Image (cartoon, rainbow, N blue to C red; front, side, top):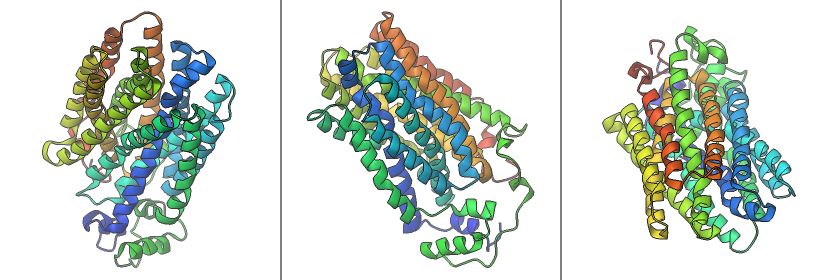
Length: 440
């Protein structure tokens, strides 16, 4: 890349306020995703009580949003590599707001499942788009950390949203949780429209008619000099979104998608069932939500430290350790006595490793795919992972309904993260170089 290449400017110059704000907006959007995904878990005890749902039926309801997320990741996420990250984000936010508001209007489980699917479609597409956007607004030095802190927006949303849900559930019924989510989702639309322009990497790659003017306008807002021309396209920048299945990229696609699937199976068992497990031990729905909040608080700490430690210890080894530690912590949580303090402490430890594993996978995804395939590759892995996300709560509900004890169910569900670590070991270290390098 030449000195006149705007991508070189982004990648080599220190990050300024404009770029930091762009990453912060991505964090906020992921926090919104975190709350929207967990809204059904926060509302689950009230829904179960009002509609008389057993563990099996409740597990299916929890999984419906994840079905939409899988479809959004597989179908909508590739659009971010075609129409742009910004337009994809705006469309996904609109779907999330509509789905949350309409979830509050339902009178039966079938309509709730429908609107949770709509919400999930928006979330699934959003995750891939903001992962690409955060990576592409960061410079080379801070890219892994930017993706890491973007990822911990999810548990931040769980903590703040969980606190809000606990307050709302103390005064209103479960529908208030969805109304709150819809309001916050709608409020983010003008923020994105005004403060999150398109990725310069995307504009330089796709080269729309006004690409040079848009790139220079963004560079000016960032305090950089304008460039005189678009960079010349390179042969390796051309191709189809289906190239994630090309002979060169297929091994890394299978590795990261397989690892994501297995870890997310464990991930959503934990997030989907922690509130219900706590209430089954004799605690209130509000206390169950509070324990879930501590899981997310641990995730914020773990994800932040993970991003900082990648400079010192390497991305792949840290992710593998985090997944194995997740399994161990889940086994311990399953055997924790019904003491609220101990449950919160173990939930914090569990969240620390659980989210560190997810942060590691998102950081891997940002590195193994080139710009033109970053959202598509991320979306495919997330979409495959959401199948695990659907299975996790459903299998957990089945285990509980068929009489498995809490410790035995936890031990069985911990296997997902162990197997994820094994699969990630198969990823060639060479694939974690800059994927825009044609030799990577």
